[in-house]
Length: 84
View: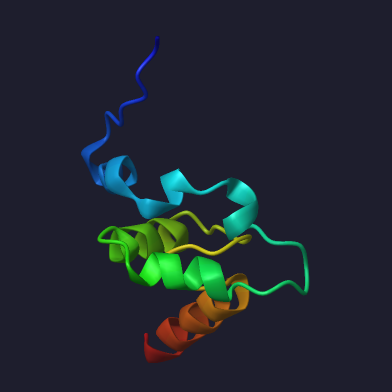
């Protein structure tokens, strides 16, 4: 059996992320579906901040990452751009 391990220390948060215990459809719901449950799970996860940073750094455009939806991450990017 192959054991999936993260070799990049910057991605170590993925090893203990709560999202690993849920299916991808939980974090990538159909358009118009609620993201509330995914966000609740994210908010309980120790890797939430690292996950959000990963999504922002890698321009993830779909799904819930670090407790924020696509629209919320885009809003955050705009606020950061306006501050700069």
